[in-house]
Image (tube, rainbow, N blue to C red; front, side, top):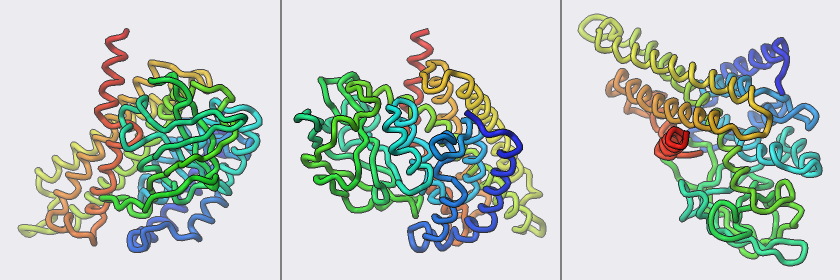
Length: 385
């Protein structure tokens, strides 16, 4: 699955124009209102951004992983919340259905997801199951031709906007083999939402708890129609998501470097621009070298992802995706710290974007697998081999 190069070049140019002309000028508004303006969301739907990863025969644009990473890299040059509006539709919310769903499930949900008519979230994390996802406690009990689901999901991205959830629940015994993946409409009786989370950064992104109390979901809504394979579905989805976030981290790193270079040229101390001082140059050079390394890893791994059979797991690619996510998200944290340092006192003031993006990038090292989980995945792969 990939868009032809000429069409992709036109799409990417259109996205870059949209970022420069519409999104960057709206960054301060987003920060003030803690939401993405409705007219911008409408424009995103019109551009097809909600369906960039969904095949054309289901109403999407059908980008390859490499192409998706290029677009997400561009979107990393502006506030995170803009991408977050459609991020779950492109990634973790939709990909389980696309990879493992039945044809009927794909036909029913993917076109609505691709158009943005339906916002879909990924509900895996729980109060006592984050990094240890296989220990989740949300329970789905079979009752006739329905499952009755009880449990609480935590930190669910786009839950306040969602019309449906790709939700993991335990249908069998302990461990990963007892977990199934469901498509759960958000208006299902018994579902309620917690209050929106107040976060360190990433204003405009929406997360909250999802509480299920005797929520009845048709058995036909198990993704793929087979119980007990939901954990495998979730892990395949996260491989792709980790590359997506790596591209986002690289885009933000480039934005931070660009802003820091501009400030270093303008800000004067001791009678000359601070960019003339070698200690400032050293921080800029280290940042650029790390960005180049991250981009190289991300592009190589995305190409490897595209080369493997669609929808299939490849342990080597999974390990490399973890390497990439670990490096890129840690890398952008270091670059954000240097950007604040280059700005000096101004870097700690909300008027400057370095302060805002310093807070925003911190989350990248936590979601879709913390840095420490990536280390475990990498090490276990090496030791197993």
